[in-house]
Length: 174
Image (cartoon, rainbow, N blue to C red; front, side, top):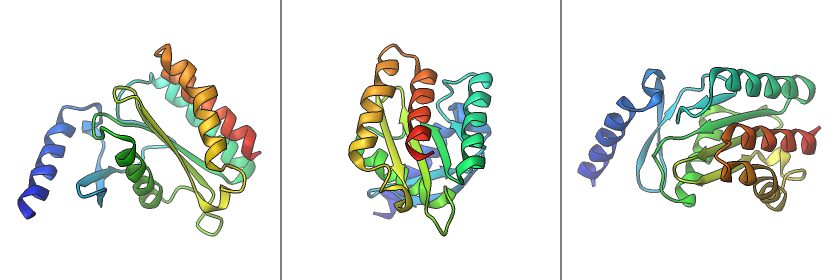
C-alpha cells in the first residue's frame, strides 16, 4: 500500500512538471478516494491549472467575482484542472478538498462556492458551503450547469461557459 502511495505521488509530481501549473506552488496533500492528490496554493479567484484562459479572461473573471464578494461576502473560486481525474466521483472529492483546504467563504457563514472543471475530461462540479445550500441546492446547481455552462462548453467556449455560470451563481446569491 505504501508503494502504491509513493507511486501516485511520483506520478503526480512528474505530471505537474509538464503542466501549465508547473510554476505554481503545491502546498497540501489530500486523501481523495484512496489516492494522494496535491492541492495547489490558490493564486486568486480563478486558478487556471489547465491553461485554457487568456490573462485578460482571468482578470475579467477575477474582477467579477471580487465585486460579488465585496457586495455579499460570498467567495467564489473557479479552478480548471489538467488531467488528474477521470470520473465525476473523484472530481467531487477534489472539489471538497479544495473547498476545505483553501477555506473558500467566511468561516462563520460557510458561504463559499468552488467551481472545478476539466475541459479535456468534460467534467464539472460546483461545490457550495452549507451556508448557501438553502439558496443553491443540487437541482439549482445542475440547472446552472446544464443551461448556462454546457451549451458554451459544447462550442469549446470555456471562458463564456464559466462566465455564464458565475453570472448565474451571482444572480442566485445577490
